[in-house]
Image (cartoon, rainbow, N blue to C red; front, side):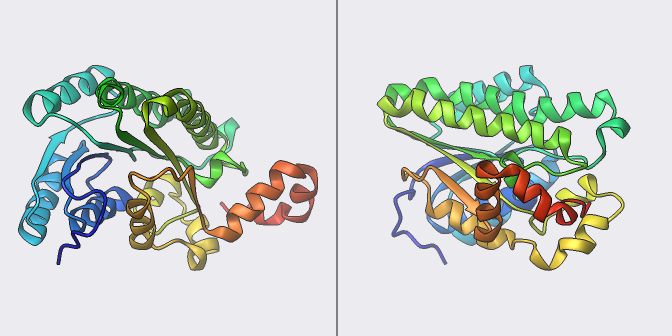
Length: 267
């Protein structure tokens, strides 16, 4: 059943990495609120299935486009097509991203390149495609999915954490740049979630074994994100206990590393 009592009813919401995981969950929550969806991901067949489900279950329009955010030319082409075929994008959720857990010495330069191209360059390029129209309309919302790894880095996530530090830094600066244009900018910094992210990031399965019982429910995370849309919420940090640790780390990094050293080696 669709809940129409919401500020995002009738809005057009584009979501990268929408074919599965938290991106898929966000899309469904948006549809429940009466928003129109623009689904973006590489796996077009999964997008088609999700779009059909959303249209049938919630009665909103749902468009989908195959997009590889690692390809900057593709980003320009797809967003230009969206502008011509659909028109405005009211909310952009930059969700596409991946990680690989590995020590720096064992990581390849290709892994580094790929993670930065997807997690950072693709996010910035997608944002730049929607900003001009948002600034002209004096309305819009950019939501960037970062990570608690953007605030506190742990062993075997050096390259992934570096990309998420970049996302958080970009988000914080962008928020100030577009404030006068009445555009909201929110960073989402979740801890580990029960999604397929870890099929790539944690191939040995050690991290899931160690922290599985504390993993976030992506359905609950998606609802929190959607409830924050078109509000001035600066950050969404989940879970609260992990964010408290991240905050303490900013203040007393040496003490946290001393007390929580063993917990950092869970991957």
